[in-house]
Length: 109
Image (cartoon, rainbow, N blue to C red; front, side, top):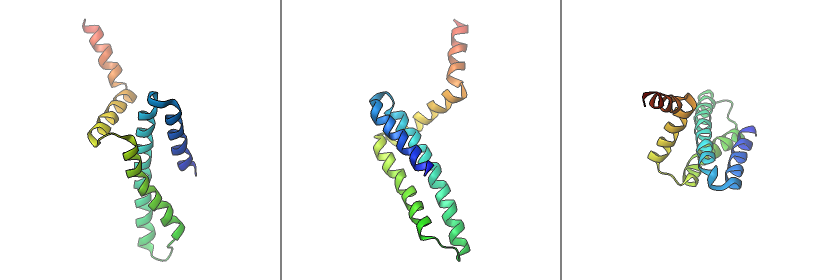
């Protein structure tokens, strides 16, 4: 429930703030959904490997997680290369790489 609530809050915040935050909100929701898909696939494989403990409700949740990924990708209105570039930029920012480059360039001039 927290997972779906977080996705909902991200998307509602993006829609309410408009273009100022919508690209970042959809990208974050897409990354979160991708992690959810990996977890869903892992749990489904574990459940099917045991064979005895099949849970139909769990399978529905896992299918919903897998369906979220292409839906969010379409909602982002970005191509795969654009999404990868946005992820690279976000990673650089979070790791401080862009700040370090700006700092180094300012020291050189």
